[in-house]
Length: 193
Image 1: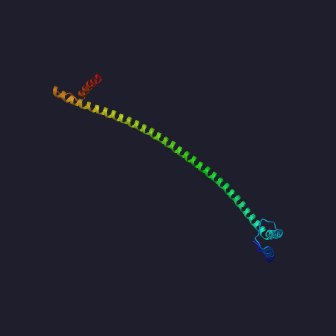
Image 2: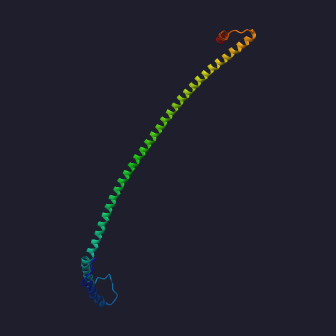
Image 3: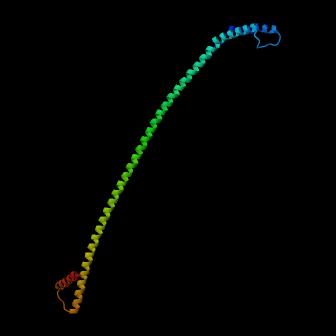
């Protein structure tokens, strides 16, 4: 702010000193509501002088400070508005990125779920085929073992029959003839059942 000059300070003081004797001459109580020409003149003169001094030295700097403050506030408001718009754009971008990430995560979950179901179905099918193959192999092995056991039992039965018949008859036929005779008998016994 500007410093007030010496004449600007002296002029109001002089006016006050000149107006003081006018108040002193009247002497009695002052009625502020009664019109007095001298008082009105000096009041008007002091008001105009003070107005000129203030307009020259005080109002201009005050108005300049107020205008500067107003410009700074407008600039701050504009900057805040721009920052808010940038933040809104950034928020929208972040929300779009978040939505995209969620969609990708859902797609990955769905893909993993379908891959798991597919793998489960494949493993189940593979297990069923292995189980069927194992059962078929077990049936073949059982059938082979059964045939082998039956052949073994027949062989033992033939030998026991031959030994039993040899003791009963007490004559010894040749082994090949006896064996053929007993096998043909057992074959006819097996077909009757």
